[in-house]
Length: 368
Ligand code: SAH
Ligand code: SF4
Image (cartoon, rainbow, N blue to C red; front, side, top):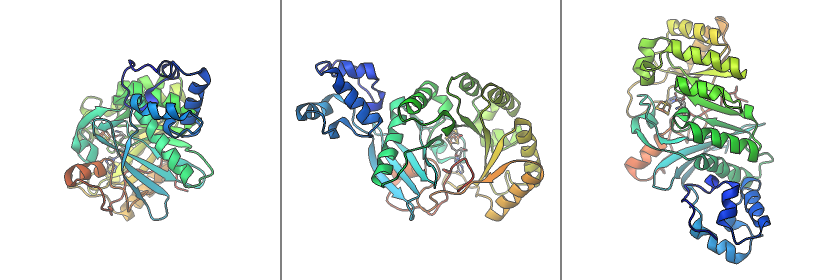
Protein backbone atom coordinates (compact mmCIF):
# COMPACT_ATOMS: atom_id res chain seq x y z
CA UNK A 1 0.00 0.00 0.00
CA UNK A 2 1.42 3.37 -1.03
CA UNK A 3 1.10 6.04 1.64
CA UNK A 4 3.03 8.70 -0.25
CA UNK A 5 0.13 9.83 -2.44
CA UNK A 6 -1.40 13.30 -2.05
CA UNK A 7 -4.01 13.72 0.63
CA UNK A 8 -7.50 13.81 -0.78
CA UNK A 9 -10.52 15.72 0.46
CA UNK A 10 -12.92 12.99 -0.64
CA UNK A 11 -12.65 9.34 -1.60
CA UNK A 12 -14.31 10.46 -4.86
CA UNK A 13 -11.25 12.56 -5.68
CA UNK A 14 -9.23 9.37 -6.16
CA UNK A 15 -9.09 8.44 -9.83
CA UNK A 16 -8.98 4.85 -11.04
CA UNK A 17 -5.22 4.88 -11.77
CA UNK A 18 -4.55 6.41 -8.38
CA UNK A 19 -6.39 3.55 -6.72
CA UNK A 20 -3.90 1.20 -8.40
CA UNK A 21 -1.09 3.12 -6.73
CA UNK A 22 -2.82 3.33 -3.38
CA UNK A 23 -3.46 -0.42 -3.41
CA UNK A 24 -0.23 -1.33 -5.17
CA UNK A 25 0.15 -4.54 -3.17
CA UNK A 26 -3.31 -5.79 -4.18
CA UNK A 27 -4.34 -7.75 -7.26
CA UNK A 28 -5.99 -5.73 -10.07
CA UNK A 29 -9.45 -7.13 -9.47
CA UNK A 30 -9.47 -5.56 -6.01
CA UNK A 31 -9.24 -2.11 -7.57
CA UNK A 32 -12.26 -2.93 -9.69
CA UNK A 33 -14.11 -4.21 -6.63
CA UNK A 34 -13.46 -1.01 -4.71
CA UNK A 35 -14.36 1.18 -7.69
CA UNK A 36 -17.58 -0.66 -8.45
CA UNK A 37 -18.46 -0.71 -4.78
CA UNK A 38 -18.25 3.08 -4.66
CA UNK A 39 -19.75 4.02 -8.00
CA UNK A 40 -22.23 1.20 -8.68
CA UNK A 41 -23.09 -0.12 -5.25
CA UNK A 42 -22.80 3.13 -3.25
CA UNK A 43 -20.69 1.23 -0.74
CA UNK A 44 -17.60 2.54 1.06
CA UNK A 45 -14.53 0.26 0.99
CA UNK A 46 -14.76 -0.15 4.78
CA UNK A 47 -18.22 -1.69 4.26
CA UNK A 48 -17.25 -3.95 1.36
CA UNK A 49 -17.45 -7.41 2.85
CA UNK A 50 -15.96 -8.88 -0.31
CA UNK A 51 -12.62 -7.30 0.62
CA UNK A 52 -10.30 -9.16 2.99
CA UNK A 53 -10.80 -7.98 6.57
CA UNK A 54 -7.14 -7.03 6.96
CA UNK A 55 -7.38 -4.67 3.97
CA UNK A 56 -10.67 -3.18 5.17
CA UNK A 57 -9.06 -2.41 8.49
CA UNK A 58 -6.00 -0.76 6.95
CA UNK A 59 -7.92 1.36 4.45
CA UNK A 60 -9.24 4.03 6.84
CA UNK A 61 -5.63 5.00 7.62
CA UNK A 62 -4.94 6.12 4.06
CA UNK A 63 -8.37 7.12 2.78
CA UNK A 64 -10.01 10.50 3.39
CA UNK A 65 -12.85 10.61 5.86
CA UNK A 66 -16.32 10.66 4.39
CA UNK A 67 -18.33 13.89 4.55
CA UNK A 68 -19.85 13.99 8.01
CA UNK A 69 -23.61 14.25 8.34
CA UNK A 70 -24.24 16.92 10.99
CA UNK A 71 -27.99 16.82 10.61
CA UNK A 72 -30.65 15.32 8.40
CA UNK A 73 -33.98 17.10 8.14
CA UNK A 74 -36.96 15.41 6.53
CA UNK A 75 -40.25 16.84 5.37
CA UNK A 76 -43.27 15.08 6.85
CA UNK A 77 -44.02 13.05 3.77
CA UNK A 78 -40.32 12.25 3.17
CA UNK A 79 -40.36 13.83 -0.28
CA UNK A 80 -37.59 16.22 0.71
CA UNK A 81 -34.51 15.41 2.76
CA UNK A 82 -31.91 18.03 3.56
CA UNK A 83 -28.46 17.38 4.97
CA UNK A 84 -26.02 19.67 6.67
CA UNK A 85 -22.60 18.15 5.96
CA UNK A 86 -19.20 18.87 7.41
CA UNK A 87 -16.17 18.93 5.13
CA UNK A 88 -12.62 18.19 6.12
CA UNK A 89 -11.43 21.41 7.68
CA UNK A 90 -14.83 21.80 9.35
CA UNK A 91 -16.66 24.03 6.85
CA UNK A 92 -20.27 23.11 6.29
CA UNK A 93 -22.37 22.68 3.19
CA UNK A 94 -25.94 21.67 2.39
CA UNK A 95 -27.36 19.02 0.09
CA UNK A 96 -31.03 18.34 -0.63
CA UNK A 97 -32.79 15.31 -2.10
CA UNK A 98 -36.15 16.04 -3.71
CA UNK A 99 -38.32 13.07 -4.56
CA UNK A 100 -40.86 13.12 -7.34
CA UNK A 101 -42.95 10.36 -8.87
CA UNK A 102 -40.69 9.80 -11.80
CA UNK A 103 -37.41 11.35 -10.74
CA UNK A 104 -35.18 11.91 -7.77
CA UNK A 105 -33.26 15.18 -7.89
CA UNK A 106 -30.29 16.15 -5.76
CA UNK A 107 -29.42 19.80 -5.19
CA UNK A 108 -25.69 20.05 -4.50
CA UNK A 109 -23.31 22.70 -3.20
CA UNK A 110 -20.20 23.61 -5.20
CA UNK A 111 -18.46 25.89 -2.69
CA UNK A 112 -18.44 26.33 1.07
CA UNK A 113 -19.97 29.79 1.15
CA UNK A 114 -19.94 32.14 -1.82
CA UNK A 115 -18.00 35.25 -2.78
CA UNK A 116 -20.68 36.78 -5.03
CA UNK A 117 -22.28 38.80 -2.25
CA UNK A 118 -25.94 38.74 -3.32
CA UNK A 119 -27.53 40.46 -0.35
CA UNK A 120 -30.77 38.44 -0.29
CA UNK A 121 -28.95 35.08 -0.16
CA UNK A 122 -27.96 33.51 3.15
CA UNK A 123 -24.88 31.91 1.57
CA UNK A 124 -23.80 35.25 0.14
CA UNK A 125 -24.29 36.91 3.52
CA UNK A 126 -21.94 34.40 5.15
CA UNK A 127 -19.12 34.97 2.62
CA UNK A 128 -16.70 32.57 0.98
CA UNK A 129 -14.86 29.80 2.81
CA UNK A 130 -13.42 27.47 0.19
CA UNK A 131 -13.87 25.66 -3.11
CA UNK A 132 -15.18 22.11 -3.07
CA UNK A 133 -13.23 19.44 -4.90
CA UNK A 134 -14.99 17.45 -7.62
CA UNK A 135 -14.99 14.50 -5.21
CA UNK A 136 -16.80 16.50 -2.55
CA UNK A 137 -19.47 17.40 -5.12
CA UNK A 138 -19.83 13.77 -6.24
CA UNK A 139 -19.91 12.56 -2.62
CA UNK A 140 -23.05 14.62 -1.97
CA UNK A 141 -24.84 12.63 -4.68
CA UNK A 142 -23.39 9.42 -3.25
CA UNK A 143 -24.88 10.28 0.16
CA UNK A 144 -28.27 10.98 -1.39
CA UNK A 145 -28.06 7.78 -3.44
CA UNK A 146 -27.39 5.68 -0.35
CA UNK A 147 -30.28 7.30 1.45
CA UNK A 148 -32.56 6.66 -1.50
CA UNK A 149 -31.59 3.00 -1.47
CA UNK A 150 -32.18 2.80 2.28
CA UNK A 151 -35.68 4.17 1.65
CA UNK A 152 -36.31 1.22 -0.66
CA UNK A 153 -36.63 3.46 -3.72
CA UNK A 154 -36.89 1.58 -6.98
CA UNK A 155 -34.96 4.24 -8.88
CA UNK A 156 -31.60 5.95 -8.54
CA UNK A 157 -30.78 9.64 -8.49
CA UNK A 158 -31.90 10.84 -11.90
CA UNK A 159 -31.18 14.59 -11.83
CA UNK A 160 -28.59 16.87 -10.28
CA UNK A 161 -29.07 20.62 -9.91
CA UNK A 162 -26.16 22.85 -8.93
CA UNK A 163 -28.26 25.18 -6.84
CA UNK A 164 -26.94 24.59 -3.35
CA UNK A 165 -24.32 26.75 -1.71
CA UNK A 166 -21.83 28.53 -3.93
CA UNK A 167 -21.44 29.73 -7.49
CA UNK A 168 -20.72 26.70 -9.71
CA UNK A 169 -19.07 28.70 -12.50
CA UNK A 170 -16.60 30.18 -9.99
CA UNK A 171 -15.38 26.63 -9.34
CA UNK A 172 -15.27 25.59 -12.96
CA UNK A 173 -12.84 22.67 -13.32
CA UNK A 174 -14.15 20.69 -10.29
CA UNK A 175 -17.72 21.33 -11.48
CA UNK A 176 -17.01 19.89 -14.92
CA UNK A 177 -15.05 16.96 -13.51
CA UNK A 178 -17.94 16.16 -11.14
CA UNK A 179 -20.42 16.26 -14.03
CA UNK A 180 -18.21 13.96 -16.11
CA UNK A 181 -17.81 11.47 -13.27
CA UNK A 182 -21.52 11.41 -12.44
CA UNK A 183 -22.39 11.11 -16.11
CA UNK A 184 -20.01 8.21 -16.70
CA UNK A 185 -20.10 6.38 -13.40
CA UNK A 186 -23.55 7.12 -11.97
CA UNK A 187 -25.09 7.04 -15.46
CA UNK A 188 -26.86 10.38 -14.98
CA UNK A 189 -27.70 11.79 -18.42
CA UNK A 190 -26.18 15.10 -19.57
CA UNK A 191 -29.65 16.56 -19.91
CA UNK A 192 -30.39 15.75 -16.31
CA UNK A 193 -27.84 18.24 -14.96
CA UNK A 194 -28.72 21.89 -14.42
CA UNK A 195 -26.04 24.43 -13.61
CA UNK A 196 -27.39 27.55 -11.95
CA UNK A 197 -25.34 30.74 -12.24
CA UNK A 198 -25.57 34.28 -10.99
CA UNK A 199 -24.34 35.30 -14.46
CA UNK A 200 -20.59 34.87 -14.80
CA UNK A 201 -20.27 35.59 -18.50
CA UNK A 202 -16.86 33.97 -19.21
CA UNK A 203 -18.02 30.90 -17.25
CA UNK A 204 -21.16 30.57 -19.40
CA UNK A 205 -18.97 30.76 -22.52
CA UNK A 206 -16.62 28.10 -21.17
CA UNK A 207 -19.56 25.90 -20.26
CA UNK A 208 -20.87 26.20 -23.82
CA UNK A 209 -17.62 24.64 -25.07
CA UNK A 210 -17.68 21.61 -22.74
CA UNK A 211 -18.57 18.33 -24.50
CA UNK A 212 -21.25 17.35 -21.95
CA UNK A 213 -24.10 19.74 -22.63
CA UNK A 214 -26.16 20.54 -19.58
CA UNK A 215 -29.13 22.79 -18.82
CA UNK A 216 -28.37 26.32 -17.75
CA UNK A 217 -30.34 28.28 -15.16
CA UNK A 218 -29.56 31.97 -14.89
CA UNK A 219 -30.50 33.70 -11.64
CA UNK A 220 -31.81 36.87 -13.23
CA UNK A 221 -34.09 38.34 -10.52
CA UNK A 222 -34.09 41.76 -12.22
CA UNK A 223 -34.33 42.72 -15.88
CA UNK A 224 -32.77 46.19 -15.79
CA UNK A 225 -29.21 46.99 -14.81
CA UNK A 226 -29.98 49.48 -12.04
CA UNK A 227 -32.09 47.03 -10.08
CA UNK A 228 -29.99 43.99 -10.93
CA UNK A 229 -26.74 45.65 -9.86
CA UNK A 230 -28.33 46.59 -6.55
CA UNK A 231 -29.39 42.98 -5.91
CA UNK A 232 -26.55 41.02 -7.54
CA UNK A 233 -23.20 42.86 -7.41
CA UNK A 234 -21.79 40.70 -10.24
CA UNK A 235 -24.08 42.64 -12.59
CA UNK A 236 -21.70 45.61 -12.34
CA UNK A 237 -19.01 43.45 -13.97
CA UNK A 238 -21.30 41.57 -16.37
CA UNK A 239 -24.35 43.72 -17.12
CA UNK A 240 -27.51 42.34 -18.67
CA UNK A 241 -26.48 42.99 -22.30
CA UNK A 242 -23.26 40.96 -21.82
CA UNK A 243 -25.17 38.26 -19.98
CA UNK A 244 -27.75 37.99 -22.75
CA UNK A 245 -24.95 37.74 -25.34
CA UNK A 246 -23.46 34.78 -23.47
CA UNK A 247 -26.89 33.15 -23.11
CA UNK A 248 -27.53 33.38 -26.86
CA UNK A 249 -24.14 31.83 -27.47
CA UNK A 250 -24.89 29.06 -25.00
CA UNK A 251 -28.18 28.25 -26.68
CA UNK A 252 -26.67 28.28 -30.15
CA UNK A 253 -23.73 26.13 -29.16
CA UNK A 254 -25.63 23.56 -27.10
CA UNK A 255 -29.30 23.66 -27.99
CA UNK A 256 -29.91 23.11 -24.29
CA UNK A 257 -32.71 24.50 -22.22
CA UNK A 258 -32.04 27.86 -20.56
CA UNK A 259 -34.17 29.08 -17.70
CA UNK A 260 -34.38 32.34 -15.78
CA UNK A 261 -34.73 32.16 -12.02
CA UNK A 262 -36.75 34.99 -10.51
CA UNK A 263 -37.07 35.17 -6.71
CA UNK A 264 -40.09 37.38 -6.21
CA UNK A 265 -39.41 40.19 -3.75
CA UNK A 266 -42.30 42.19 -2.43
CA UNK A 267 -42.29 45.68 -3.93
CA UNK A 268 -38.84 45.17 -5.47
CA UNK A 269 -39.13 43.10 -8.65
CA UNK A 270 -42.80 42.10 -8.77
CA UNK A 271 -44.48 45.04 -10.53
CA UNK A 272 -46.26 44.86 -13.88
CA UNK A 273 -43.32 46.81 -15.35
CA UNK A 274 -40.91 44.16 -14.04
CA UNK A 275 -43.02 41.49 -15.74
CA UNK A 276 -42.83 43.34 -19.08
CA UNK A 277 -39.04 43.80 -18.85
CA UNK A 278 -38.57 40.17 -17.89
CA UNK A 279 -40.83 38.95 -20.70
CA UNK A 280 -38.79 40.87 -23.24
CA UNK A 281 -35.54 39.21 -22.16
CA UNK A 282 -37.09 35.75 -21.78
CA UNK A 283 -38.70 35.85 -25.22
CA UNK A 284 -35.48 37.07 -26.83
CA UNK A 285 -33.51 34.24 -25.19
CA UNK A 286 -36.23 31.59 -25.55
CA UNK A 287 -35.86 31.06 -21.80
CA UNK A 288 -38.28 29.34 -19.47
CA UNK A 289 -39.09 31.43 -16.38
CA UNK A 290 -39.13 29.92 -12.88
CA UNK A 291 -40.80 32.05 -10.24
CA UNK A 292 -40.34 31.47 -6.52
CA UNK A 293 -41.23 33.79 -3.65
CA UNK A 294 -38.09 35.15 -1.97
CA UNK A 295 -37.32 33.36 1.22
CA UNK A 296 -36.57 36.00 3.82
CA UNK A 297 -33.20 35.75 5.47
CA UNK A 298 -31.96 37.37 8.67
CA UNK A 299 -29.59 39.71 6.85
CA UNK A 300 -32.07 41.11 4.32
CA UNK A 301 -35.26 42.93 5.31
CA UNK A 302 -37.25 42.35 2.08
CA UNK A 303 -39.96 39.71 2.19
CA UNK A 304 -41.19 37.42 -0.56
CA UNK A 305 -44.17 38.43 -2.69
CA UNK A 306 -47.49 36.94 -1.65
CA UNK A 307 -48.51 33.76 -3.40
CA UNK A 308 -51.40 35.68 -4.95
CA UNK A 309 -48.94 38.18 -6.47
CA UNK A 310 -46.66 35.39 -7.66
CA UNK A 311 -49.60 33.83 -9.48
CA UNK A 312 -50.70 37.18 -10.93
CA UNK A 313 -47.14 37.82 -12.13
CA UNK A 314 -47.06 34.39 -13.75
CA UNK A 315 -50.38 35.12 -15.43
CA UNK A 316 -49.04 38.44 -16.76
CA UNK A 317 -45.96 36.73 -18.16
CA UNK A 318 -48.05 34.04 -19.79
CA UNK A 319 -50.19 36.73 -21.36
CA UNK A 320 -47.01 38.19 -22.84
CA UNK A 321 -46.19 34.82 -24.43
CA UNK A 322 -43.71 33.43 -21.88
CA UNK A 323 -43.31 29.91 -20.52
CA UNK A 324 -43.56 30.15 -16.76
CA UNK A 325 -43.48 27.79 -13.81
CA UNK A 326 -44.29 28.80 -10.28
CA UNK A 327 -41.81 26.65 -8.47
CA UNK A 328 -43.12 24.72 -5.55
CA UNK A 329 -41.35 25.45 -2.33
CA UNK A 330 -40.00 22.05 -1.59
CA UNK A 331 -39.37 21.08 2.00
CA UNK A 332 -41.02 24.23 3.27
CA UNK A 333 -41.11 22.98 6.81
CA UNK A 334 -37.53 21.75 6.95
CA UNK A 335 -35.33 23.85 4.78
CA UNK A 336 -34.48 27.47 5.02
CA UNK A 337 -33.03 29.16 1.97
CA UNK A 338 -29.74 28.12 0.57
CA UNK A 339 -27.13 28.55 3.27
CA UNK A 340 -29.49 29.37 6.10
CA UNK A 341 -29.07 26.06 7.81
CA UNK A 342 -25.29 26.34 7.83
CA UNK A 343 -25.46 29.91 9.08
CA UNK A 344 -27.81 28.96 11.85
CA UNK A 345 -25.52 26.15 12.83
CA UNK A 346 -22.57 28.51 13.05
CA UNK A 347 -24.44 30.92 15.21
CA UNK A 348 -26.40 28.68 17.56
CA UNK A 349 -24.23 25.59 17.56
CA UNK A 350 -26.78 23.02 16.43
CA UNK A 351 -29.35 22.96 13.66
CA UNK A 352 -32.04 21.02 15.44
CA UNK A 353 -34.90 23.44 15.18
CA UNK A 354 -37.24 22.97 12.25
CA UNK A 355 -37.74 26.01 10.11
CA UNK A 356 -41.05 27.36 8.92
CA UNK A 357 -39.41 29.20 6.06
CA UNK A 358 -39.98 28.30 2.48
CA UNK A 359 -36.97 27.00 0.67
CA UNK A 360 -34.93 28.33 -2.18
CA UNK A 361 -34.33 24.78 -3.28
CA UNK A 362 -36.80 23.50 -5.71
CA UNK A 363 -36.83 21.68 -8.95
CA UNK A 364 -36.60 23.29 -12.31
CA UNK A 365 -39.26 21.29 -14.04
CA UNK A 366 -42.95 21.89 -13.38
CA UNK A 367 -43.92 20.21 -10.13
CA UNK A 368 -45.40 16.77 -10.48
N1 SAH B 1 -24.86 30.67 -7.14
C1 SAH B 1 -25.80 30.09 -8.03
C2 SAH B 1 -26.41 28.80 -7.51
C3 SAH B 1 -26.74 28.74 -6.05
S1 SAH B 1 -28.04 29.80 -5.51
C4 SAH B 1 -26.86 31.10 -8.40
O1 SAH B 1 -26.90 32.17 -7.80
O2 SAH B 1 -27.60 30.81 -9.33
C5 SAH B 1 -29.45 28.90 -6.11
C6 SAH B 1 -30.67 29.77 -6.35
O3 SAH B 1 -31.24 30.20 -5.11
C7 SAH B 1 -30.38 31.02 -7.16
O4 SAH B 1 -31.37 31.19 -8.15
C8 SAH B 1 -30.47 32.09 -6.11
O5 SAH B 1 -30.73 33.36 -6.66
C9 SAH B 1 -31.58 31.55 -5.25
N2 SAH B 1 -31.69 32.16 -3.92
C10 SAH B 1 -30.69 32.52 -3.09
N3 SAH B 1 -31.20 33.06 -1.95
C11 SAH B 1 -32.54 33.02 -2.08
C12 SAH B 1 -33.61 33.42 -1.25
N4 SAH B 1 -33.39 33.99 -0.07
N5 SAH B 1 -34.86 33.23 -1.68
C13 SAH B 1 -35.10 32.66 -2.89
N6 SAH B 1 -34.12 32.25 -3.73
C14 SAH B 1 -32.86 32.44 -3.33
FE1 SF4 C 1 -23.70 33.08 -4.36
FE2 SF4 C 1 -25.83 32.28 -5.76
FE3 SF4 C 1 -26.09 33.14 -3.22
FE4 SF4 C 1 -25.49 34.89 -5.14
S1 SF4 C 1 -27.40 33.68 -4.97
S2 SF4 C 1 -24.51 34.75 -3.13
S3 SF4 C 1 -24.19 33.66 -6.44
S4 SF4 C 1 -25.02 31.33 -3.90
